[in-house]
Image 1 (cartoon, helix red, strand yellow):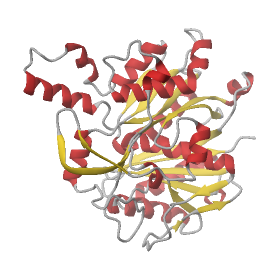
Image 2 (image 1 turned 120 degrees about the vertical axis):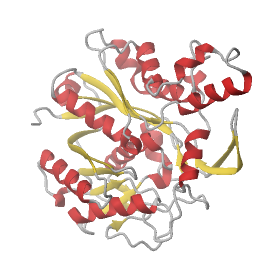
Image 3 (image 1 turned 180 degrees about the vertical axis):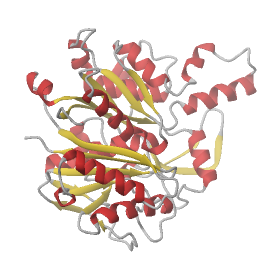
Image 4 (image 1 turned 135 degrees about the vertical axis):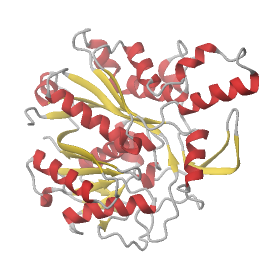
Length: 394
């Protein structure tokens, strides 16, 4: 039973379209430029692979040189987002009140894992740098961040595939409701790596054309992205007592698993979230979906949304901006939804309207609309279904 109003009172982010809430808000006006990756330290693709990657990331400028020598990209992304968003809060907290950390990721530091093994094969096990072994576990970024910022009260890594980032928020929401801790920094993290790209490529889900067309009848797959989006969660009372800016409240959330991929479980998850929030389906102003251009996943998500809302509520897909950021996507979608909620707008798919067979009201371009409640959904190809309802707090 929900007993506290849990709000988002801080944001830290590193994404292809901005490293602050303000940059993301303005960055949604212009989709990131398409990029390509091909060569990695130990491996290369035969042809360049389209992606939406972070091109202006300088962790030394954010964190300084000390302690970064043996940290991998995933860890540097998480450290940087934490530094940019929460340094003041962390420095002001005592050991007892220091926020915990809960990070969702699908693949974690998979580039480090693969490179460590590749280096041992190419160079021999006696040549591999043993200090890099610490990067070969999925919770290495979370652990390194807790060490740097002394966040001893909670250190959790959530890995539920493509839903990891949004599930980290749900986990943290429940944790706060039960009074285990006063504040949690929660969100999602993912890096573009050779090994994850290779797996997606061999699975046939990467777009050969390098286009992102959520819910399109002719969509040919996803374009990979990367990034980190973190949120400080705490009770509304606590946030107001310290005069913190409140970006929004989480009023309802739920998750489940749908092995059939028909949308039934997502519909139940959405209804459960609405009941928790104490609102009707008609009170949702728009839906920030997880539509990515993966035909099977998009059909699954559209079916679940349509069974609750029909085509009466506008639906957008921020992955048309960010790309498919795997475990970070749910958190990045929450970030974009908060930006649109603050501006009373809906940032739709930036392409000119294209044919879609999805039984939902897909938004193209930008619409101005008074926004109070936003539903963020994620229905991944592995069967995980999640939903979070955000509410504007005046």
